[in-house]
Length: 64
Image (cartoon, rainbow, N blue to C red):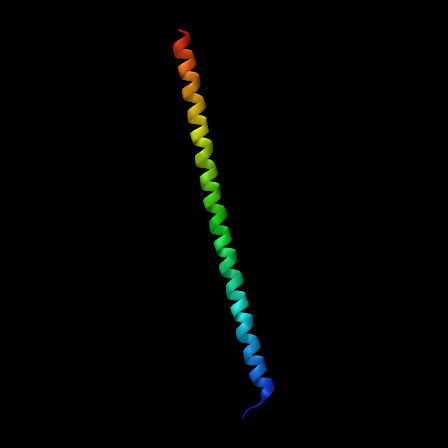
């Protein structure tokens, strides 16, 4: 039949590996999501700056 403690240790180590793998995967996905969010935020800031600049140009242009 085999040693029950050995079977238990094998089960434990495989589940531990699975947990570690899932944690690493989650950490990697989380990092990727934060990178994507940073990119989205910087794009948003650039767009806001463009809108402000265009508004200022329009005000100055109409003021002449």
